[in-house]
Picture (cartoon, rainbow, N blue to C red):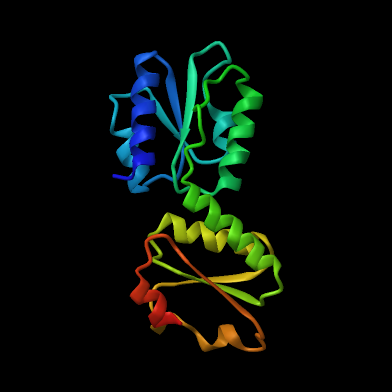
Amino acid sequence: TCPLVTKVHREVARMREENRTVLMIGHAGHPEVEGTMGQVDGGIELIENADDVAKLPYTNQDPLAYVTQTTISADDSQVVIDALRQRFPDIHEPKRQDICYATTNRQAAVKLLARSGVDIVLVIGSATSSNSNRLREVAEREGTRAYLVDTAEHLDPAWFEGVKCVGITAGASAPESLVQGVL
């Protein structure tokens, strides 16, 4: 287990020992989210977006805390964190950000890549990878067409019609052999 994920597990256990309800910012069905939520018996609730924050049945007087999935989009999580802070000014926050620095760095790099004038961005990685999907979303949010490919066979020649410049990145779990195969 990644040390950062272990840190989140410890934070959840500590917050539950303090009788806080833990709000987990993440994606339903993601293995890390399921694993983290399984660390404790109840007292933890998943929130995926700011709309979920509005629906929470708590008040600012309730002992609340939040943690984040380590591979979630930094931009997406910040929107949810801002909504939590606005609705629950006294919410307990992690001492340090839970999002993996490698994930944050990759997302920042893709943002720059998408803004650099490329026509499309190819993200090499599995469709089941949260990290790879977030990279594709980051590029699209910057207004650049982006495609997730997990093998060279998934490249569609139509994507490249009229394209002069292609940006390429890879998800954290994409093996080098896969990257080389797509290149």
